[in-house]
Amino acid sequence: MGLSMATAEFWVERWERQQERYAIHREERFSVVADVVDHVTADRPAPLVVELGCGPGSLAARLARRVPRAEIVAVDRDPVLLELGRTHHADAARYVEAVLGDAGWAESLRLDRAPDAAVSSTALHCLPEAALSRTYREVAALLRPGGVLVNADHFTPDGAFCARVASDVGRRRLRTSPAEHGLDWDSWWAAAAQDPELAESFAERERRPPAEGGSDGVSLSRHVHLLTEAGFAHVCTVWQYGYSRVLVAAT
Ligand SMILES: C[S@@+](CC[C@H](N)C(=O)[O-])C[C@H]1O[C@@H](n2cnc3c(N)ncnc32)[C@H](O)[C@@H]1O
Figure 1 (tube, helix red, strand yellow):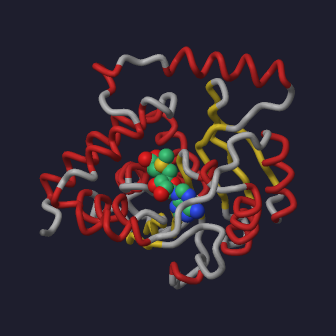
Figure 2 (figure 1 turned 90 degrees about the horizontal axis):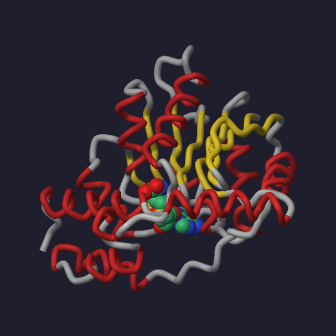
């Protein structure tokens, strides 16, 4: 049974509500990512943008609306989320299944030119530190000179005091009622797995090796260090709320 547009819309809509439980001011941070891409590609008629850990295409869809001249290649490891993106946000991006940090992921994108930007939203913290470090290096090597990585994610502030305050501020903002925000992560996956239209994608998902633990505890200064070592010359925060930031790294 194939995935219909209506079913894809149903699950992507619930994905959006679910993600809002974890990503503070999610819509605003998407806008900030688009602002940065628009700024750095202002003089380019057809900028190429790679999205890392795209899920069902939420950021790609916003970016395609905000910067319609951009060509977007969106990569993720999850066949269920990719299937939802390919169906619900089909025109936003070309979707590629690959595991960031694994050998050959960048080649599997089959890009015809160096990208102007790589973007990401609440995804790179899922990578263990070694894979994150490799990904930073590969992205720096992939980008055109002057290209940028724009990463909206949570970053643990340095030092116990700052980490505590930032975490508390973030948690207060995330204290949302289930009635308002629907399913959480586990219940979204459990409910989607029951949908017969997604059965094939879930069977694919089962065949994939499980993801290793992420790099949630990696401090902000460690990220900056890894980015600098990877070849990024400039790293700055352009938006912050608690421990959430949009971090921009330029080659
Ligand atoms: C919390 S979701 C966020 C998805 C999307 N960016 C959004 O904002 O809705 C994290 C995403 O990262 C993807 N991901 C995690 N580790 C990955 C890896 N090593 N390679 C590719 N994708 C990965 C997951 O499959 C998932 O789609």
